[in-house]
Length: 377
Image (cartoon, rainbow, N blue to C red; front, side):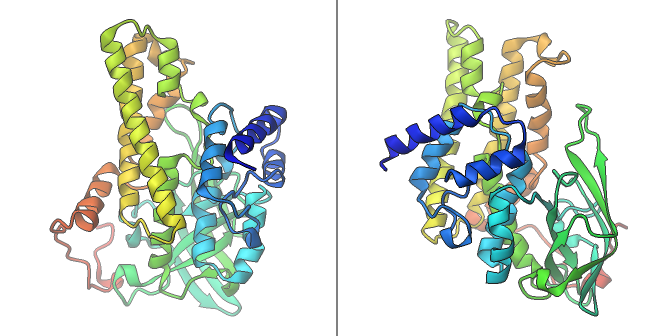
């Protein structure tokens, strides 16, 4: 099937199956139709196709409202991490179910005292008979209230520097001792959660990577997180974004040359980011690790979102901040994207240090055992 036929078939399938009343049923049907995990290996439940098919489907999907947000963490971060770092048994157990929407995933990294400095986390995993016992707290966790499973980064060694004493696990979010509490944001919605772990038992077979090597696994996850955030993996299409070029150009007076210039700027930024993401995706598929350039994609998206929200408000006028106005969601999302997945300042530090090879900022904790650090003091 050539790409034109592929796009036509995808459009016909989406038109027939949307809107969908149940996200899980829709994801199962999406997978069975060949549109979930398009480039993921067929042996683990993917379709085994190329980036060309994935881009073709993404282009078609922008014209529809896909009920896939709740699966975005699994599709964009957890699943790719399992493919890169999981054992064959773990891939067999989790990946196909993830792609079919049978299990929802979340990512458990940030803590009240460890946000941008993720390696400073304190949630502790101790060895016990048959596995590990976890105690601690995580926060700002998206879709945790719906999640069945999560990628959990824990501290397993306090006698080494903070980056060297972490271990990654898959945790059952329904296990005894796991408590999820929603956090209400300024829109009145609860998109984030705080999670408490009280003597939660995790079998050792759920460990991803080696003991105390969790930071390298986390770096893999963070790379996929920044790439997925910037490319919108698992999110609804631009049709649902009132601050996108498509939405604004259809709702304002484009006869004004100043407005046209502003819309052109929005289009150029959007197109540049899309092409950059496409390049990173092609390199990843070819086995070229994008590394810190994923932080550049995430930074570009955060800045693009703020620009689009500001432009939308300036064009819509004061009514944009009224209750129920479509731009309200964009206004709430803009600051969130400059924080979630690493702040803009952290992204610039990473780019300067690891892409541009600028001198790094001074660090006093690099070689200090975690137990000797002044944490939360």
